[in-house]
View (cartoon, rainbow, N blue to C red):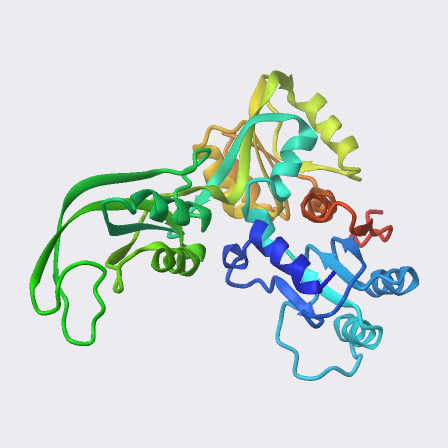
Length: 364
């Protein structure tokens, strides 16, 4: 199998435009046209993980955290990142990272956390904005369904849990073909009127080029009239964090002890625990303090995340319980997510979850 086949599939599920501006998700090192027969999945790329890949003869490492976050001016082996790069290139091992783009999708990092702790009715806690466009175009009678199907196939028309969403209304279009044109209908030099349908549908911004190409290829006109309008609507299936509900309200101490066991936490830092039971829970793998106010506004009783600072705990203000379970602990099951994504498309591809525990934090 070619490396680009795996990369293309991963980026179809977790598109790179969904990553945060500071991130460096994608192919870190490796030739896209290289042949690979197996991959090692890890949370972090470390020297131990590279050694594991070399011993196992894996041609690809798929990680959650990118090996390279900052610019590199020289590669001399002066730190672990540089040593990993040297070792990977020397042994012809490609490295790919799916980070905040994987955090942002439904079915990604936070969905797995919700699954592990048994949440139901889960949805994105803070949906992404400025990620949707409205496509408006005009199609002559008899060609509406062909164009509409082409747009759907390219990824247009999805709203939440619904697909093939569009609206059409009948009207009359006018145009005059000038010299050099090759009109589908009408006569050069004469004003023409044509019964047409105004077709509207939703387009994710990252798919706009693909959708417009599908429109041009399926539309009968030589020059296709269309508008792409930026929308302020939330992209409900993409964003940060998730929120869901327990099937049965739980006592907070009992539940946090369950979380501690499930995630193998050495400890859980938390705000004061109320005496009442709770049901609605917000989660965010990794550093989630920026979502505290959002979790409160959504009525969550408990927010599970990591890397809360001292003053973050004051934000709870007895309106929510904050529970810091650790960065590594909250994201450790991301390896399972990546494995599921790859095997769904390539069920016979050889995958192995790294045996190296890459958590750099220890507790005395």
